[in-house]
Length: 490
Image 1 (cartoon, rainbow, N blue to C red):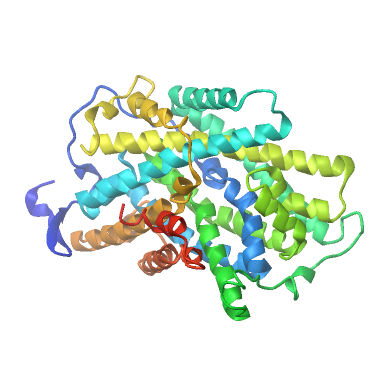
Image 2 (image 1 turned 30 degrees about the horizontal axis):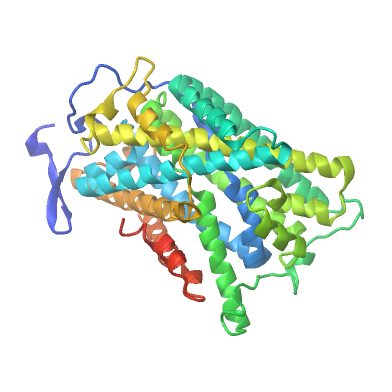
């Protein structure tokens, strides 16, 4: 594009030249191989529905219910779901128009500032260097439910080898496996939601129609959290319970931006990415909001079984509110075992799929950073199957590391920062289009509710992130404070 066709966009204290035309990407040194566009439409669509759905929903929702009550968990997940949807449509508009292989960190570099792109890329990479081994450790704990005859390090080696080989064989194999993983996730979630609806309507051993019974006091509609710490102030304790749900749900939605990473390897991304982004709405509505609504119907937030499950079995199937519901309703014998087996196997698939996706995202993020000169050049190398193998080896090396709880607590902070950067980059993108005289109506995908949706999501995410460590002050705990906020300046 000629210099006189470029226009300047104000960016705070400086002026940056922004070219929004797809062919105007910054020049990078040619490499022999590059990523292959081999992800098919059906794979992207199914990944959009079931990809990145992890234990935050099927297990973490139990803790959220205990803290916020049935109304609190429904409102909290709905509010954060709306934020997530706004972030995804912002990402979708940019990714469909500029489906390059640098990821959304490349968009941030282009439309905001190179320093912001550098910070976002490494922030996002750090998240997946932490969360990948965490998911593998969760898979080992699930295996321990069935047998402890095999040492845990052996299982760790098996799982690391499994996800490494899948990623090493190329995006075609990865996409096909994630298609089936996501399909199983979708089927399992639908089965659990149907189980909850049937139980609530009286399909249980006692033939008891529960309805909205657990939305009534003392079980609902809102939970009570940190009552003793706030001096017995019940209204404040109810608000803190609701706010704890907001923090919990932020973690549950993390990883939804996986679609934005796949654009560099998607077939016909300007056609397939908009379809995938649109399916995100139904995923949020049915699986997340529908799931927590059903959980709030069949499990009382004050149940002792729920308290025991969420405090003593925070990673196993017993912590799932669906299993708690089956236990409380007297569903025993083979039927109880079937439900427990279904949830346990679903959790194993969830965490292995998440670990597989995490390794994929981490390697592609590092590859994108290397393309822009923000990481060593060796990570730009790609084999004939389109796999950035040095980046893959680097990310795999972290899978065997021991992940402390303190580091895992940083994941939601890293994820929130990623969302805010995506949203602000989209605001800059829309401003660049306006300066260039390009109508958003001509884009392959035009995000609805913009720019108001982006501003709303930035403010909402920022508020949740700023106050996510509130319980570290009740009373003050130095370790809780550090892990809640150290990710922000980092």
